[in-house]
Image 1 (cartoon, rainbow, N blue to C red):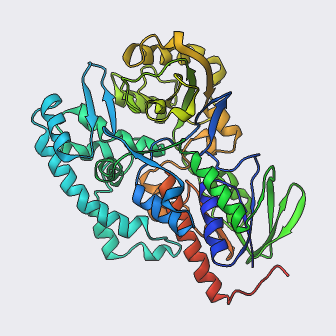
Image 2: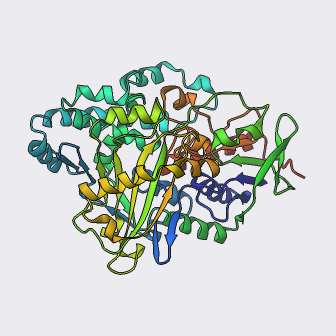
Image 3: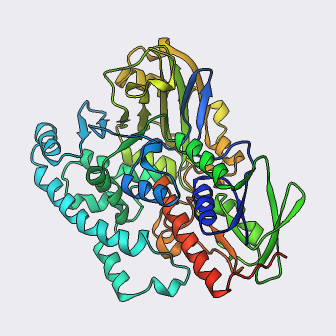
Length: 488
Protein backbone atom coordinates (compact mmCIF):
# COMPACT_ATOMS: atom_id res chain seq x y z
CA UNK A 1 0.00 0.00 0.00
CA UNK A 2 1.25 3.45 -0.92
CA UNK A 3 1.24 6.22 1.67
CA UNK A 4 2.14 9.80 0.79
CA UNK A 5 3.09 12.31 3.47
CA UNK A 6 2.73 15.96 2.48
CA UNK A 7 5.31 17.70 4.65
CA UNK A 8 8.46 16.63 6.47
CA UNK A 9 7.93 18.20 9.89
CA UNK A 10 8.42 16.15 13.05
CA UNK A 11 4.87 14.78 12.82
CA UNK A 12 5.47 13.61 9.26
CA UNK A 13 8.79 11.98 10.12
CA UNK A 14 7.40 9.98 13.03
CA UNK A 15 4.39 9.02 10.89
CA UNK A 16 6.69 7.76 8.13
CA UNK A 17 8.70 5.54 10.49
CA UNK A 18 5.62 4.06 12.16
CA UNK A 19 3.90 3.41 8.84
CA UNK A 20 7.01 1.87 7.29
CA UNK A 21 7.24 -0.39 10.32
CA UNK A 22 3.67 -1.51 9.55
CA UNK A 23 4.44 -2.47 5.97
CA UNK A 24 3.55 0.66 3.98
CA UNK A 25 5.44 1.94 0.98
CA UNK A 26 6.04 5.52 2.23
CA UNK A 27 7.05 8.70 0.41
CA UNK A 28 7.62 12.06 2.10
CA UNK A 29 7.14 15.16 -0.06
CA UNK A 30 8.81 18.19 1.54
CA UNK A 31 8.59 21.61 -0.13
CA UNK A 32 11.90 22.92 1.25
CA UNK A 33 15.44 21.58 0.86
CA UNK A 34 15.51 20.08 4.36
CA UNK A 35 13.33 18.06 6.73
CA UNK A 36 12.20 19.03 10.21
CA UNK A 37 9.93 22.03 9.74
CA UNK A 38 10.37 24.30 12.76
CA UNK A 39 12.88 21.84 14.22
CA UNK A 40 16.02 23.07 12.45
CA UNK A 41 19.25 25.02 12.88
CA UNK A 42 20.34 28.55 12.14
CA UNK A 43 23.96 28.25 11.03
CA UNK A 44 26.79 30.67 10.40
CA UNK A 45 30.22 29.22 9.69
CA UNK A 46 31.14 26.93 12.60
CA UNK A 47 28.22 28.20 14.69
CA UNK A 48 24.77 26.63 14.91
CA UNK A 49 21.77 27.17 17.18
CA UNK A 50 18.23 25.78 17.24
CA UNK A 51 15.93 27.84 15.06
CA UNK A 52 12.69 26.86 16.80
CA UNK A 53 11.99 24.59 19.81
CA UNK A 54 14.69 24.52 22.49
CA UNK A 55 13.09 23.26 25.73
CA UNK A 56 12.75 19.48 25.90
CA UNK A 57 9.69 18.53 28.00
CA UNK A 58 7.89 15.23 28.68
CA UNK A 59 11.07 13.17 28.13
CA UNK A 60 9.37 9.85 28.87
CA UNK A 61 6.76 10.43 26.15
CA UNK A 62 9.43 11.59 23.71
CA UNK A 63 11.69 8.59 24.33
CA UNK A 64 8.85 6.07 24.29
CA UNK A 65 7.65 7.20 20.86
CA UNK A 66 11.20 7.33 19.49
CA UNK A 67 11.78 3.75 20.65
CA UNK A 68 8.53 2.68 19.00
CA UNK A 69 9.76 4.38 15.82
CA UNK A 70 13.03 2.41 15.89
CA UNK A 71 15.34 4.94 17.57
CA UNK A 72 17.11 3.77 20.72
CA UNK A 73 18.06 6.01 23.65
CA UNK A 74 21.78 5.60 22.88
CA UNK A 75 21.42 7.47 19.58
CA UNK A 76 21.00 10.84 21.31
CA UNK A 77 21.78 12.40 24.68
CA UNK A 78 19.31 14.23 26.91
CA UNK A 79 20.90 16.44 29.56
CA UNK A 80 18.84 17.10 32.69
CA UNK A 81 18.96 20.77 33.73
CA UNK A 82 19.32 21.87 37.35
CA UNK A 83 17.95 24.43 37.88
CA UNK A 84 15.32 24.01 35.18
CA UNK A 85 15.56 27.72 34.41
CA UNK A 86 15.70 31.12 36.08
CA UNK A 87 13.22 34.00 35.99
CA UNK A 88 14.23 37.65 36.44
CA UNK A 89 11.44 40.06 37.40
CA UNK A 90 11.47 43.77 36.66
CA UNK A 91 11.85 44.65 40.37
CA UNK A 92 15.12 42.70 40.57
CA UNK A 93 13.63 39.60 42.22
CA UNK A 94 14.70 36.25 40.80
CA UNK A 95 13.12 32.81 40.97
CA UNK A 96 14.74 29.53 39.96
CA UNK A 97 12.73 26.39 39.24
CA UNK A 98 13.90 22.93 40.29
CA UNK A 99 12.74 19.35 39.84
CA UNK A 100 13.75 18.58 43.40
CA UNK A 101 10.86 19.42 45.73
CA UNK A 102 13.03 20.40 48.70
CA UNK A 103 15.18 22.72 46.58
CA UNK A 104 12.03 24.40 45.29
CA UNK A 105 10.64 24.85 48.79
CA UNK A 106 13.95 26.40 49.88
CA UNK A 107 13.86 28.74 46.87
CA UNK A 108 10.33 29.84 47.77
CA UNK A 109 11.27 30.32 51.43
CA UNK A 110 14.16 32.57 50.37
CA UNK A 111 12.49 34.66 47.66
CA UNK A 112 8.74 34.28 48.26
CA UNK A 113 8.28 33.37 51.94
CA UNK A 114 4.79 32.18 52.81
CA UNK A 115 4.11 30.70 49.37
CA UNK A 116 5.44 27.21 50.18
CA UNK A 117 2.11 25.66 51.13
CA UNK A 118 0.47 26.96 47.98
CA UNK A 119 3.16 25.40 45.81
CA UNK A 120 2.79 22.07 47.63
CA UNK A 121 -0.99 22.14 47.00
CA UNK A 122 -0.38 23.07 43.35
CA UNK A 123 1.85 20.06 42.82
CA UNK A 124 -0.54 17.73 44.65
CA UNK A 125 -3.60 18.89 42.70
CA UNK A 126 -1.81 18.90 39.37
CA UNK A 127 -0.49 15.39 39.95
CA UNK A 128 -4.07 14.11 39.93
CA UNK A 129 -5.13 16.34 37.04
CA UNK A 130 -2.14 15.37 34.89
CA UNK A 131 -3.06 11.69 35.13
CA UNK A 132 -6.67 12.49 34.25
CA UNK A 133 -5.77 14.81 31.38
CA UNK A 134 -3.14 12.49 29.92
CA UNK A 135 -5.49 9.50 29.89
CA UNK A 136 -8.59 11.30 28.69
CA UNK A 137 -7.23 13.89 26.27
CA UNK A 138 -3.54 13.50 25.35
CA UNK A 139 -3.77 9.80 24.46
CA UNK A 140 -7.15 9.75 22.73
CA UNK A 141 -8.24 10.97 19.32
CA UNK A 142 -11.76 12.35 18.82
CA UNK A 143 -12.41 11.45 15.20
CA UNK A 144 -15.91 10.51 16.33
CA UNK A 145 -16.68 13.73 18.19
CA UNK A 146 -19.47 12.06 20.13
CA UNK A 147 -16.81 10.01 21.94
CA UNK A 148 -15.65 13.21 23.65
CA UNK A 149 -19.00 14.10 25.20
CA UNK A 150 -19.17 11.40 27.84
CA UNK A 151 -20.09 12.00 31.45
CA UNK A 152 -16.59 10.86 32.41
CA UNK A 153 -14.91 13.41 30.12
CA UNK A 154 -17.18 16.21 31.30
CA UNK A 155 -16.35 15.41 34.92
CA UNK A 156 -12.66 15.43 33.97
CA UNK A 157 -12.99 18.84 32.30
CA UNK A 158 -14.62 20.19 35.45
CA UNK A 159 -11.77 18.79 37.56
CA UNK A 160 -9.29 20.38 35.16
CA UNK A 161 -11.24 23.65 35.57
CA UNK A 162 -11.24 24.16 31.80
CA UNK A 163 -13.74 26.99 32.25
CA UNK A 164 -11.06 29.11 33.97
CA UNK A 165 -7.99 30.62 32.36
CA UNK A 166 -4.52 29.55 33.45
CA UNK A 167 -3.54 32.79 35.18
CA UNK A 168 -6.82 33.06 37.11
CA UNK A 169 -6.68 29.43 38.23
CA UNK A 170 -3.29 30.05 39.87
CA UNK A 171 -4.80 32.54 42.33
CA UNK A 172 -5.92 29.46 44.26
CA UNK A 173 -2.26 28.62 44.95
CA UNK A 174 -0.14 31.78 44.80
CA UNK A 175 -0.78 35.16 46.39
CA UNK A 176 2.11 36.90 44.65
CA UNK A 177 1.41 37.84 41.03
CA UNK A 178 5.05 37.23 40.11
CA UNK A 179 4.59 33.55 40.93
CA UNK A 180 1.35 33.47 38.95
CA UNK A 181 3.40 34.77 36.02
CA UNK A 182 6.06 32.11 36.67
CA UNK A 183 3.47 29.33 36.48
CA UNK A 184 1.33 30.67 33.62
CA UNK A 185 3.88 31.87 31.04
CA UNK A 186 4.28 28.24 29.85
CA UNK A 187 1.17 28.61 27.65
CA UNK A 188 3.45 30.77 25.50
CA UNK A 189 5.46 27.62 24.70
CA UNK A 190 2.51 26.71 22.47
CA UNK A 191 1.55 30.27 21.51
CA UNK A 192 -1.32 30.73 23.96
CA UNK A 193 -2.40 33.67 26.09
CA UNK A 194 -2.09 32.82 29.83
CA UNK A 195 -5.04 35.12 30.49
CA UNK A 196 -7.30 33.21 28.07
CA UNK A 197 -5.96 29.66 27.66
CA UNK A 198 -7.91 27.02 29.64
CA UNK A 199 -6.61 26.10 33.09
CA UNK A 200 -5.74 22.59 31.88
CA UNK A 201 -2.62 24.11 30.28
CA UNK A 202 -1.22 24.87 33.76
CA UNK A 203 -0.24 21.20 33.58
CA UNK A 204 2.73 22.32 31.46
CA UNK A 205 4.36 24.18 34.35
CA UNK A 206 3.57 21.25 36.67
CA UNK A 207 5.20 18.86 34.19
CA UNK A 208 8.43 20.88 34.26
CA UNK A 209 8.81 20.14 37.97
CA UNK A 210 7.51 16.57 37.81
CA UNK A 211 9.26 15.34 34.67
CA UNK A 212 12.12 17.81 34.36
CA UNK A 213 13.44 20.15 31.68
CA UNK A 214 16.08 18.69 29.37
CA UNK A 215 18.49 19.76 26.68
CA UNK A 216 19.30 17.56 23.69
CA UNK A 217 23.07 17.50 23.12
CA UNK A 218 23.82 19.09 19.77
CA UNK A 219 20.52 20.98 19.85
CA UNK A 220 16.90 19.84 19.54
CA UNK A 221 17.31 19.85 15.74
CA UNK A 222 19.81 17.00 16.18
CA UNK A 223 16.70 14.83 16.39
CA UNK A 224 15.94 15.53 12.71
CA UNK A 225 19.38 14.30 11.64
CA UNK A 226 18.82 11.07 13.58
CA UNK A 227 15.31 10.58 12.16
CA UNK A 228 16.43 11.24 8.58
CA UNK A 229 19.22 8.67 8.86
CA UNK A 230 16.80 6.00 10.14
CA UNK A 231 14.21 6.92 7.50
CA UNK A 232 16.74 6.39 4.71
CA UNK A 233 17.96 3.13 6.24
CA UNK A 234 14.38 1.85 6.54
CA UNK A 235 13.61 2.55 2.87
CA UNK A 236 11.32 5.56 3.17
CA UNK A 237 11.53 7.67 0.02
CA UNK A 238 12.29 11.33 0.78
CA UNK A 239 11.67 13.98 -1.87
CA UNK A 240 12.83 17.49 -1.01
CA UNK A 241 12.02 20.67 -2.93
CA UNK A 242 8.74 18.87 -3.67
CA UNK A 243 5.74 21.17 -3.29
CA UNK A 244 2.38 19.45 -2.87
CA UNK A 245 0.00 21.61 -4.92
CA UNK A 246 -3.34 19.81 -4.85
CA UNK A 247 -5.17 16.57 -4.09
CA UNK A 248 -7.39 14.57 -6.42
CA UNK A 249 -10.33 12.61 -5.03
CA UNK A 250 -13.42 10.72 -6.14
CA UNK A 251 -15.53 12.47 -3.50
CA UNK A 252 -15.10 9.73 -0.94
CA UNK A 253 -11.38 9.01 -0.98
CA UNK A 254 -8.26 10.84 -2.09
CA UNK A 255 -6.71 9.14 -5.12
CA UNK A 256 -3.42 10.99 -5.35
CA UNK A 257 -1.66 14.30 -5.23
CA UNK A 258 0.06 16.71 -7.59
CA UNK A 259 3.66 17.53 -6.67
CA UNK A 260 5.64 20.06 -8.73
CA UNK A 261 3.11 19.47 -11.52
CA UNK A 262 3.43 15.66 -11.49
CA UNK A 263 0.68 13.30 -10.36
CA UNK A 264 1.41 10.65 -7.71
CA UNK A 265 -1.31 8.05 -6.98
CA UNK A 266 -1.63 7.02 -3.36
CA UNK A 267 -3.77 4.81 -1.13
CA UNK A 268 -3.37 6.90 1.99
CA UNK A 269 -2.52 10.58 2.31
CA UNK A 270 -1.18 12.35 5.42
CA UNK A 271 -1.19 16.15 5.63
CA UNK A 272 1.72 17.45 7.71
CA UNK A 273 1.71 21.12 6.77
CA UNK A 274 0.33 23.70 9.20
CA UNK A 275 -3.27 22.55 8.87
CA UNK A 276 -5.10 25.90 8.55
CA UNK A 277 -2.69 26.82 5.74
CA UNK A 278 -3.12 23.57 3.78
CA UNK A 279 -6.75 22.66 4.51
CA UNK A 280 -7.91 24.42 1.30
CA UNK A 281 -6.57 21.39 -0.60
CA UNK A 282 -9.25 19.28 1.08
CA UNK A 283 -12.18 21.52 0.11
CA UNK A 284 -15.10 20.94 -0.16
CA UNK A 285 -14.59 17.88 2.03
CA UNK A 286 -13.41 19.74 5.14
CA UNK A 287 -15.72 21.92 7.27
CA UNK A 288 -15.25 25.64 6.71
CA UNK A 289 -14.05 27.31 9.87
CA UNK A 290 -12.36 30.48 11.03
CA UNK A 291 -9.27 29.68 13.06
CA UNK A 292 -7.32 31.82 15.51
CA UNK A 293 -3.54 31.64 15.11
CA UNK A 294 -1.08 31.32 17.97
CA UNK A 295 1.18 34.19 18.90
CA UNK A 296 4.08 35.06 16.69
CA UNK A 297 7.72 35.34 17.72
CA UNK A 298 10.52 37.75 17.11
CA UNK A 299 13.65 35.58 17.27
CA UNK A 300 17.23 36.80 17.56
CA UNK A 301 20.09 34.40 16.88
CA UNK A 302 23.57 35.54 17.83
CA UNK A 303 27.11 34.22 17.63
CA UNK A 304 29.30 35.52 20.46
CA UNK A 305 33.05 35.61 21.04
CA UNK A 306 32.64 34.45 24.65
CA UNK A 307 30.59 32.12 26.84
CA UNK A 308 28.54 33.66 29.67
CA UNK A 309 29.39 30.89 32.13
CA UNK A 310 27.48 32.54 34.99
CA UNK A 311 24.19 32.46 33.04
CA UNK A 312 21.58 29.68 32.98
CA UNK A 313 20.82 27.67 29.85
CA UNK A 314 17.21 28.93 29.93
CA UNK A 315 16.25 32.33 31.37
CA UNK A 316 13.16 34.51 31.35
CA UNK A 317 13.45 38.27 31.72
CA UNK A 318 9.97 39.47 32.64
CA UNK A 319 8.65 42.91 31.74
CA UNK A 320 7.16 45.26 34.33
CA UNK A 321 3.57 44.55 33.20
CA UNK A 322 3.12 41.00 31.89
CA UNK A 323 -0.64 41.40 31.38
CA UNK A 324 -0.07 44.50 29.24
CA UNK A 325 2.44 42.56 27.13
CA UNK A 326 -0.15 39.82 26.56
CA UNK A 327 -2.82 42.40 25.60
CA UNK A 328 -0.42 43.86 23.04
CA UNK A 329 0.28 40.40 21.59
CA UNK A 330 -3.25 38.97 21.54
CA UNK A 331 -5.72 41.90 21.65
CA UNK A 332 -4.37 45.18 20.24
CA UNK A 333 -1.78 43.26 18.16
CA UNK A 334 0.82 45.98 18.45
CA UNK A 335 4.58 45.97 18.90
CA UNK A 336 5.14 45.29 22.63
CA UNK A 337 6.26 48.29 24.66
CA UNK A 338 7.98 46.43 27.52
CA UNK A 339 8.12 42.75 26.58
CA UNK A 340 9.16 39.69 28.51
CA UNK A 341 12.09 37.90 26.86
CA UNK A 342 13.19 34.26 26.82
CA UNK A 343 16.95 33.69 26.43
CA UNK A 344 18.65 30.40 25.53
CA UNK A 345 22.42 30.04 26.01
CA UNK A 346 23.19 26.34 25.40
CA UNK A 347 26.94 26.81 24.96
CA UNK A 348 27.25 26.72 28.76
CA UNK A 349 26.78 22.94 28.58
CA UNK A 350 27.42 22.18 24.89
CA UNK A 351 30.72 23.21 23.30
CA UNK A 352 29.79 21.63 19.93
CA UNK A 353 27.66 24.62 18.85
CA UNK A 354 30.44 27.18 18.38
CA UNK A 355 34.24 27.39 18.05
CA UNK A 356 36.22 26.90 21.24
CA UNK A 357 35.68 29.70 23.76
CA UNK A 358 32.77 31.12 21.75
CA UNK A 359 29.03 30.63 21.98
CA UNK A 360 25.53 31.05 20.60
CA UNK A 361 22.66 33.00 22.14
CA UNK A 362 18.99 32.80 21.15
CA UNK A 363 16.34 35.30 22.30
CA UNK A 364 12.59 35.00 21.77
CA UNK A 365 9.97 37.70 22.27
CA UNK A 366 6.24 36.90 21.99
CA UNK A 367 4.76 39.30 19.43
CA UNK A 368 1.49 39.45 17.46
CA UNK A 369 0.90 37.04 14.60
CA UNK A 370 -0.35 38.43 11.29
CA UNK A 371 1.36 40.42 8.56
CA UNK A 372 0.15 43.89 9.58
CA UNK A 373 3.49 44.87 11.15
CA UNK A 374 6.49 45.52 8.89
CA UNK A 375 9.17 44.03 11.09
CA UNK A 376 11.93 45.26 8.79
CA UNK A 377 11.08 48.73 10.10
CA UNK A 378 11.40 47.68 13.74
CA UNK A 379 15.17 48.03 14.19
CA UNK A 380 14.64 50.18 17.28
CA UNK A 381 12.58 47.39 18.89
CA UNK A 382 15.27 44.81 18.11
CA UNK A 383 17.94 47.05 19.59
CA UNK A 384 15.83 47.52 22.74
CA UNK A 385 15.74 43.73 23.18
CA UNK A 386 19.53 43.53 22.94
CA UNK A 387 19.83 46.43 25.41
CA UNK A 388 17.52 44.65 27.86
CA UNK A 389 19.53 41.41 27.60
CA UNK A 390 22.74 43.38 28.08
CA UNK A 391 21.42 45.18 31.14
CA UNK A 392 19.73 42.23 32.84
CA UNK A 393 21.78 39.12 32.12
CA UNK A 394 24.54 39.44 29.51
CA UNK A 395 26.89 42.33 30.41
CA UNK A 396 28.52 44.13 27.47
CA UNK A 397 26.62 41.86 25.08
CA UNK A 398 26.93 44.16 22.06
CA UNK A 399 30.71 44.14 22.05
CA UNK A 400 30.72 40.32 22.00
CA UNK A 401 28.28 39.81 19.08
CA UNK A 402 30.10 38.43 16.02
CA UNK A 403 26.98 37.85 13.92
CA UNK A 404 23.24 38.29 14.35
CA UNK A 405 20.18 36.97 12.48
CA UNK A 406 16.52 37.81 12.98
CA UNK A 407 13.32 35.90 12.25
CA UNK A 408 9.89 37.54 12.44
CA UNK A 409 6.21 36.61 11.88
CA UNK A 410 6.62 37.95 8.33
CA UNK A 411 9.18 35.20 7.71
CA UNK A 412 6.97 32.59 9.38
CA UNK A 413 4.07 33.64 7.17
CA UNK A 414 6.18 33.24 4.03
CA UNK A 415 7.20 29.77 5.20
CA UNK A 416 3.56 28.67 5.39
CA UNK A 417 2.83 29.03 9.11
CA UNK A 418 -0.78 30.09 9.58
CA UNK A 419 -0.90 33.92 9.71
CA UNK A 420 2.72 33.94 10.88
CA UNK A 421 1.89 32.23 14.18
CA UNK A 422 4.83 30.20 15.41
CA UNK A 423 2.89 27.38 17.09
CA UNK A 424 -0.06 26.48 14.87
CA UNK A 425 -3.52 27.19 16.24
CA UNK A 426 -3.84 29.11 19.50
CA UNK A 427 -4.62 26.77 22.43
CA UNK A 428 -7.92 28.45 23.30
CA UNK A 429 -10.84 26.54 24.80
CA UNK A 430 -12.63 26.14 21.46
CA UNK A 431 -9.43 25.11 19.68
CA UNK A 432 -8.49 22.39 22.17
CA UNK A 433 -9.48 18.74 22.52
CA UNK A 434 -12.52 17.85 20.45
CA UNK A 435 -12.67 21.40 19.05
CA UNK A 436 -9.22 21.13 17.44
CA UNK A 437 -8.76 19.57 13.97
CA UNK A 438 -8.48 15.81 14.42
CA UNK A 439 -6.17 13.17 12.98
CA UNK A 440 -8.81 12.44 10.33
CA UNK A 441 -9.67 16.03 9.47
CA UNK A 442 -12.04 15.72 6.51
CA UNK A 443 -14.80 13.59 5.01
CA UNK A 444 -12.27 11.89 2.72
CA UNK A 445 -11.88 8.48 4.32
CA UNK A 446 -8.19 7.93 3.59
CA UNK A 447 -6.85 11.40 4.44
CA UNK A 448 -5.16 11.99 7.80
CA UNK A 449 -3.25 14.82 9.46
CA UNK A 450 -0.41 15.39 11.92
CA UNK A 451 1.22 18.54 13.24
CA UNK A 452 1.01 21.30 15.84
CA UNK A 453 -2.49 22.41 14.76
CA UNK A 454 -3.89 18.88 15.07
CA UNK A 455 -5.11 17.39 18.37
CA UNK A 456 -3.51 17.02 20.92
CA UNK A 457 -1.54 20.18 19.99
CA UNK A 458 1.85 21.84 19.85
CA UNK A 459 5.22 21.01 21.37
CA UNK A 460 7.48 18.30 19.95
CA UNK A 461 6.37 15.40 22.22
CA UNK A 462 2.68 16.19 21.70
CA UNK A 463 3.07 16.44 17.92
CA UNK A 464 4.79 13.04 18.04
CA UNK A 465 1.95 11.72 20.21
CA UNK A 466 -0.55 13.06 17.67
CA UNK A 467 1.31 11.24 14.88
CA UNK A 468 1.25 8.03 16.90
CA UNK A 469 -2.52 8.33 17.50
CA UNK A 470 -3.06 9.11 13.84
CA UNK A 471 -1.19 6.00 12.68
CA UNK A 472 -3.23 3.89 15.12
CA UNK A 473 -6.43 5.33 13.67
CA UNK A 474 -5.20 4.72 10.12
CA UNK A 475 -4.30 1.10 10.88
CA UNK A 476 -7.80 0.52 12.27
CA UNK A 477 -9.24 1.93 9.06
CA UNK A 478 -6.97 -0.31 6.98
CA UNK A 479 -8.36 -3.34 8.81
CA UNK A 480 -11.91 -2.21 8.03
CA UNK A 481 -11.04 -1.87 4.32
CA UNK A 482 -8.98 -5.08 4.41
CA UNK A 483 -5.96 -3.22 3.10
CA UNK A 484 -7.13 -3.22 -0.53
CA UNK A 485 -4.86 -1.04 -2.68
CA UNK A 486 -6.83 1.67 -4.42
CA UNK A 487 -4.09 3.30 -6.44
CA UNK A 488 -3.62 0.50 -8.98
